[in-house]
Structures are given as structure tokens and as C-alpha cells.
Length: 441
Picture (cartoon, rainbow, N blue to C red):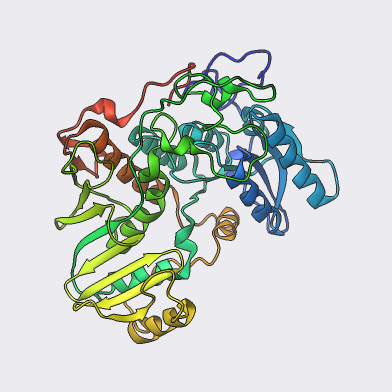
């Protein structure tokens, strides 16, 4: 991975993403977190999502926030104030350039919650510098980056957790265990209701205000005029809409798809594989309606059902946040809730009934995590794979990207998940992007 020439403003010692070699102090590659030590964490990208994650990490006795980075002055200063207020000191360092965090050998892990077009660069740089990584979903911006991240984790023997936190929810786990243990019979098809594919960014240019390094925000993405839709100035309490645009995100196919397609993979046992083909939507103007096809000729419909739905020969399982429903083949609700507004049933009680009725002696038991950040911190200490490790995060991202490419290019695709290459119908250019500013994965 290469980066632009280092300037006076962002001068560092050679970083993991610079062309020059980066030599760490001896022993850092094999360093483990000692049982009585707190895990020193640096945070990159201090918008709404990382505000929540920062507070989550700081609430755990095993971790301490030591540094924050953001290209927006107000956001990074607010993040420092949160840490200093929490610890009653002024020890948290604040940086405009994320590479300052990467270059510190006293930081054990980084938490990344920048726009998608930055994820792979920051993740791989951290891995190459000997750090463990918690990176928000989707893990990458394209297929090429997904493969690169998996390789970097393996090469550096690091821990990576993807922020697909639904796997740390008992409801989604139970839903997938019902499917994996044959409660609804043989799965015939699946569906996700996750919103639209990405669209080209055509936002008008606005006047730039002081305090934001707009060039740094764009980074490897296309250079364009400033838009407050992409990066609202200062501290804000909403999720910016950069995620709608394919240059910087991937629409809801990547945003919500990284959650719900991930659950489809969990329920189908596809964590180490993925789709083998795609099917176009029936109307080229539509941003929903395409399909992913999984081994066994199992389609995943985009834009139907609840968040994630499994249809079997003997019934169906629907799951969403605050909703799990188990139905028989005649469409009768056996356990769970009909929808998220169903006040007749208590979901926790219904989940207990499902487990007692169908999963007491289940042959397939899935990974149990009750909370995503503690699961990551435990993996940092034990060096065991976390709930949504790099292969899970990358494979889900690849599925999202393939679905998007079907919309972007209006062409059905045949895919080889073992080699992560097109089997038929695809152009290698679709696997990557044109990197700007001298950045390249």
C-alpha cells in the first residue's frame, strides 16, 4: 500500500502506508497484552459512530483511550474532551492525521469509524504497525480491499473485529441456529430488506469553512467540492449521508447490507465462502430487486421481507433488530413477534421458548457474544479470533460489493469465492477503484 509524499504538515516517521520501510521496535510484532495491563486504544474518525464506540471502550476497565484523530478540528477536540473528562486528566493526545496514531508504538489497538473509502488504508496501516483493529462495517470499499485486509491480518498475526455487531445479539444468533439446525427444513431462498444500492455523487459545492481539512477527508476518493451532506461541520448527532454515494460508501447495500447480508451468511454457513452468482433487477432503473445466488442455488432477494429472512421447506425465520419470528410452512407464527410493533409478545421471553423447544440439544451451536467491544478486547488478550473476524467481515463486504456491481454495470455475474475472482461476466476493474491523491492499496 502506498501513500502520498509526506508533507511538512503531516510529517511522521515512515508509516506503515508510506513507500519507505517502517521499522518497529523489536518485540512489538509478538507483543501480547499482559493480564494486568490496560489495552491502549487510539480512535480514528470521531463522528457519531466513534463517539459511541469511544464511550463504550472507555467504559471497560480493560481499555484506555490514549489518542484520537479526525480531519475536523471540532470533532477531534470534542473527542479529546470526552477522554480527559472520563479520566480526569489531560493525557489523551489529539491528531489531525491518523498516521500519528499508527506511528505510535505504545498503542495496542485502533478503533476506526471513518467513511468507507478510508477503511482499508487505515486498517492495513494499523495491522502492519503491529496493532489490533476494530473497524466499522462495511470492512472495505471494494473486493480488492477485502482480500488485501484478509492477507494483512494473516501476515501480521493480528486481531481484527468488524463492527457487524448484530452477531453479538442473542436474537440474531438464535434465528441463525434455528436455520442451521433444520427447524425450517431445507432453505430454499433468503431475503434482505436493506435499502438502495449506491448512487453517483452529484452534490453541489458549498463554501468551505475553516477547521476541516477537506483534502484529507477526500483522501483516496475522488476530489470534489466541499459538501456538508458528506461531512457536516463540527460535532453532529446524525449519520452523514456520504454512505449513499458509491465514491465514498456503497448505499444501503453496503451500510445495512453489511449487517443483514452478514446474518444471511451466518444462517447459511457461508462465513468462509459467499455467493457464486448475481441476478439483475428486472428494471435497470431500480436500485432494489437484484439477487445474490449461493451454493445449492439458494437466492438472496434484495428488497423483500424483514431485515433478514430465511424461507425453508417447513417454514421461515424472520429477524430484525427487536424482531425474531418463527413461522410454520402455512405461515402461522409459532414463536416470536410478527413485526417490531407487536406489543403482544415479549421478545426475550419468546427467544427463551424457541431455545427450549428447538435448540436444547442442537447439534449446531454458534459463536456466543453478548457485547461486541468486550468480545474484541477479550480477543486482544487471548489472541483467539473474535466474533466477526477479518474473514467474516471481508466475505460479507465482498457480497455487498458484488450486489452493488450488478446494479452499477447492469450485468449478471458468476463468481468464484475460493479465488475471489469472476468466473464469468465481470470486469477486473469492478473489483477495485481509481485511487486518488497518491494513495493505493
